[in-house]
Amino acid sequence: MRKLTYFIACSIDGFIGDPSGDATSMYRFVDEEFLEFLKTDHPETVSTPGRRALGFDDLPNRRFDTVIQGRSSYDLALKEGVTSPYAHLRQYVASRTLTESPDPQVEIVADDVVGKVRELKAEDGELGIYLCGGSQLAGVLFDEIDELVIKTYPVVYGSGMPMFGSDFAVTEFVHEEVRAFGNGAVVRTYSRKR
Ligand SMILES: NC(=O)c1ccc[n+]([C@@H]2O[C@H](COP(=O)([O-])OP(=O)(O)OC[C@H]3O[C@@H](n4cnc5c(N)ncnc54)[C@H](OP(=O)(O)O)[C@@H]3O)[C@@H](O)[C@H]2O)c1
Image (tube, rainbow, N blue to C red; front, side, top):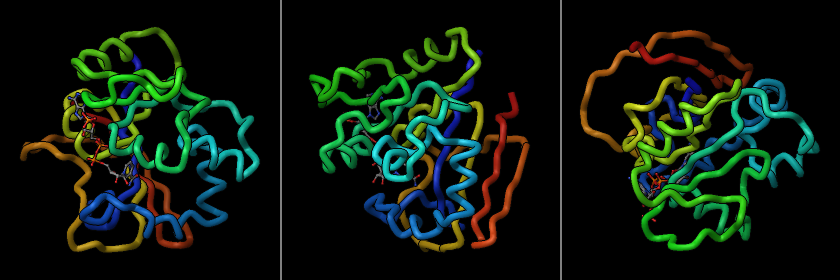
């Protein structure tokens, strides 16, 4: 089974963005050391325009070959005029309102997004599926998430958009790995206890 990994940037208090979802105040922690980590360990989680700007668009995928995101998250790329934000991955966008995909490289999933993810997980292959966010889609796919990679930046928001837009349920994960950075960022990896 291929894994579904929620790879997400968070404040110390577990928010993925301000109350509107805006995560730009975390960007400043993506410094030289952090960028080197992304480049080495997770180059495919950087968007196509980002990879081009940073000069590593040709790096091979290390962990994921597929990405899924919610329509609101995809909207951020569309607003910048980017219709294929992860051109190096197979791309899926969950949406019931986007009747037609803005890009031939992006497939819209309108019905049974959980079933689609189960189908993708059942495919053969070494690389996994990157759940890019946001909160609402992560809530819908919560039971399918096998791994969490949480990039915690040293900021407290007080309130904001939670990691999961789902109901209260205590769910155990097993800590696998932690990496700390000079600027106070910490990246923790957890696998789901099945
Ligand atoms: N911190 C980070 O690393 C990070 C990463 C990604 C995103 N974000 C932030 O997250 C925010 C967006 O999160 P969000 O929770 O508002 O939205 P989201 O999860 O990105 O997208 C929600 C949309 O996904 C579609 N959707 C949800 N469930 C569905 C289902 N069962 N079937 C089909 N479509 C479904 C719906 O689209 P339709 O309305 O079109 O039907 C829904 O409006 C952004 O502001 C972004 O900045 C942060």
